[in-house]
Image 1 (spheres, rainbow, N blue to C red):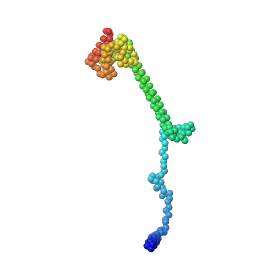
Image 2 (cartoon, rainbow, N blue to C red):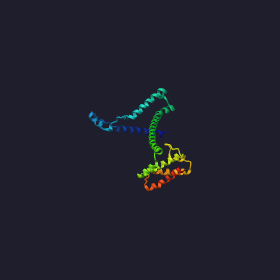
Image 3 (cartoon, one colour):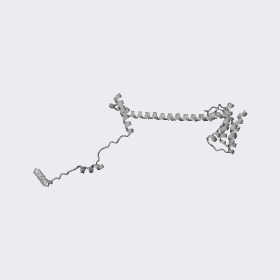
Image 4 (cartoon, one colour):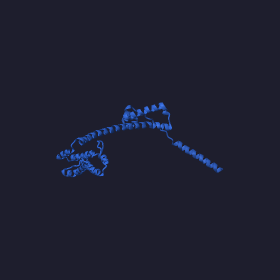
Length: 244
């Protein structure tokens, strides 16, 4: 018990000594403070420095953003007036949030479809117009012209590609006159091949059709020597048709 009291007494004296030392270490600064004067001229340097410019500049809206915001405001007012969408939540809020984008996408779809349809109609009309001119020319040649005379004229002018074309039209004329095909301006050469019932005529007509397409539409250069070889299948078919 005596030891305990001695230890307590030593502790108290120790704390008192530390407190006295702390009191003796405290000093006070009694220096007179000089008041700094800041003028407007002093602030000008900071105002001119961009690093001290803390003003937040709101970017100006471009024309597309203005149109988009205007459209959004109109839709919001419309839906608020009808459904009270301003207070909507959950699935209804989600639906009305994406609805403007769906409407815009639908509008773009209609515009694109309209322009594609207009261009498509123009192309079809142009194609029909060009086709009708070509078919009218063929019809005139097949029904009214002396095709053998046209062949001789083209050969004399050394226009062998045109002579091959006249040979092909002469074959169409003979096939029409013998009721092997029914010639019509809108039909294709493949249609005529399918109409021919006799296999030997069909095979020969396929052959001259291949030659005609290669020479006329492929713009194959034909000289006098090649022409003498290419005209033989046409003359063979035409002779076969007219003799039967």
